[in-house]
Length: 480
Image 1: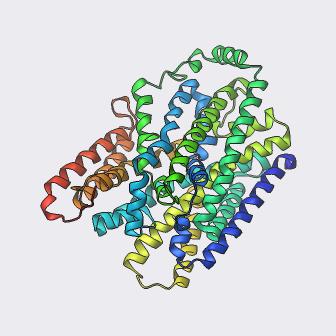
Image 2 (image 1 turned 45 degrees about the vertical axis):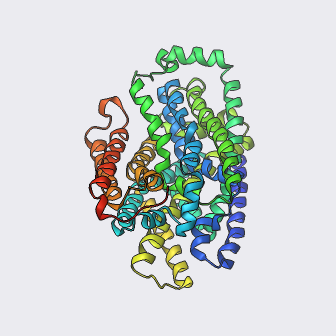
């Protein structure tokens, strides 16, 4: 084992677990276990809110899969990835104060709580929970694989052993600490991600002999690598533009991001988070993907693109510094997995089990069920991760598109259109989910665009049509 590299990672993990056990005090002492465990009692300040959004959104795809794709496709993928600059801005500006106010009014702890109270529909709850479970399993699988790949590259252990080590560590952390632990450690992880990106960016440019030499090297390998169109001219304007829907505007529909807009303390915290989050997301997404392209000049011929980042770090940095930098992807992966596990557990426990099976459950019973469900989810994802693909980013983007197709219009119209009702919400969710899966299977890039675009358009039309058609049958509305 490469102990000079591994030691900083072990120190980082020790800090993370210390925060988890500190946060467990709040779980134990809280008067409302459900609100504390799943939402941190809505006490996030601006910096922590920004960092938890950055760390939750910045995942294995951002630090492992994305740079791996950039390695194969060139600068065009960097341009495409920069659509993510608007992520935090859109989420907090579109949802912002109104979502936080309505969530508090409804006493909503989860996104599904909000949808349940807004639309007064059991069908909305069940379709929402099913969608979260179906699509987030794909995203969690990507994170598990990314964590295992990282540990495999650093330690020399085989993939399966690395997978079990990573899964056990993360699952235990979530069970112990809950949402507050996830949010506070996300702040630490966000700082590590930012610093790691900066250090590796500088080191890679130096190792490649400067920007001029790197660009010349890339051009000699394939002139298309330094164009906006990809190594094989596969990045068309329509496809790149459609990514503004997938990883920009559409992020409003991601439950793991949306729930963060429920958890901030006050409007000042939200405004500060918009500024900090936009700057940090922009730098990290540009830096990591640009590093992925430059890695091709420094290390040509890497066979498994998802291993580019750990291999590059160990090549261009001293061992101990490489360990510090590699804490960045570990931070990104852990923070995203933490958030997804909490989200899936809350969907099953809070939104389904407590609503429809055990409404009068004691706190002790809720704790036992919450911990058990989190553990079972972790085990199931491990089983799904045993046969990994070469590029995990496609798993993550599949999850993004599916969740956005289902949730974006029930969330947005639920806040801003008083005529929107349960018939529109259910129709939109079914059309979004069904059309997304069908397009993904049979026509992944219709009209040269990403799969997500047409399902979002179809679900939009379905929401409007059904809400107007059944307007008289529904009494649910909100003041807008």
